Length: 219
Image 1 (cartoon, helix red, strand yellow):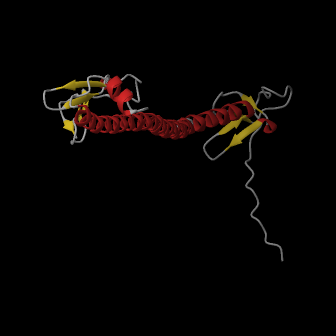
Image 2 (cartoon, rainbow, N blue to C red):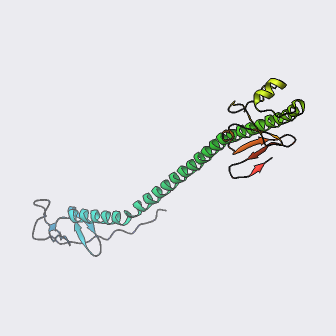
Image 3 (cartoon, helix red, strand yellow):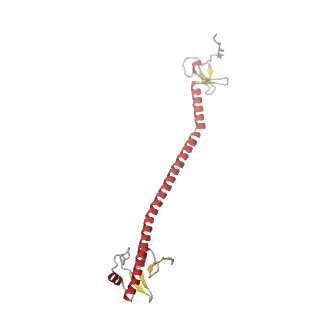
């Protein structure tokens, strides 16, 4: 059985002595509570217990309500956009920072890889030079015993003892220098600075001696 809905209460209006402001010739039945002009029944735009508005005033009222709602909701949108932009900027900065760290690590790694071979070559040059000087010091001692005098130059050792390939510094290819201190022949590297040191020397029966620029010496 269908449920009976209560009938809408019909407002009884009295015909006014003027015609409608919109529909010409049609008697007016109410005055708009906002613009105070007379209108007919068909020109009711909004009606409540408090007021009756014409179509125009009702439309203006709805437009103002929409504008008020937009003003209320408008600040929320920029806040969201600002939040998103902040997250985007932070994410971009994070990416840039990570790229900077990776690039710095790569540059440091490349630099260390470039330095390590140089150090290795330098150490090898010092090691080879020390070995040559020690061998020449031993040959100088033998030369002294054989000829009863110390060798005065590399030519003495190379010509008299047939030494080849070890009379020259492996870096500069210059002949080693022989000095005599009255007791021992001292074999010297001609250009120790090329090895990054102050001097490299050897005397018979002892390991070659390296003096670094900070005055430290390592046998």
